[in-house]
Length: 245
Ligand code: PGA
Image 1 (cartoon, rainbow, N blue to C red):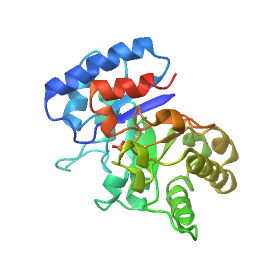
Image 2: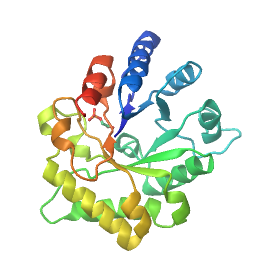
Image 3: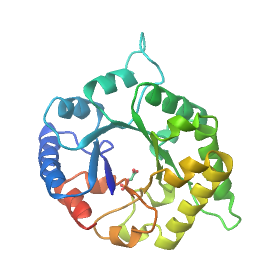
């Protein structure tokens, strides 16, 4: 399984990052799972310069390739650090104004820089008319729809329903609803994008995943998890990974 820790802006002190990285280095050796950490940009640079046995992901990427764009972090600079993944489409960035159009451009920029994309999708809320399914379909098609099928293999999908993010362990999605959504996503991809990609794409789940609820979320065809808060301390991240045997 794939575990991608989205540290968001949880850690400020470099000592906290060091302690977490040391714990993950130990964990990688004992575990059969693939572990990825997505720290803030300064911490990403710091970790990239040190020995790390887990992979690194960026939480964002610039739309620009290079040039006079103050404050932007380009895909090329991430690649040159040895960063493997970029998270694109997270709901917290969508809430800051990133449209499907911008997200699609960022995905292109990441792929052009040789990075793998963790493409996050998820509805704000569920309604009894199934409008949330059209919402998910639009998120998928607007970003994946026009791409060369050969490049799609570099895109992992993270299904993160917004209503389940940052909640208590017992407010997480049910295994039944998660399984249904994963089937739905694969069906849309098979019918509207590419059949081969639909059968192969890795789909991970994010939204209040922790050691307390992860076992209940291990359903067929799930490839891993994208924890936020639970990834921010060595204790909670280790416990989460160890809970999945
Ligand atoms: P959470 O965050 O695990 O704290 O809910 C997940 C995410 O937003 O990626």
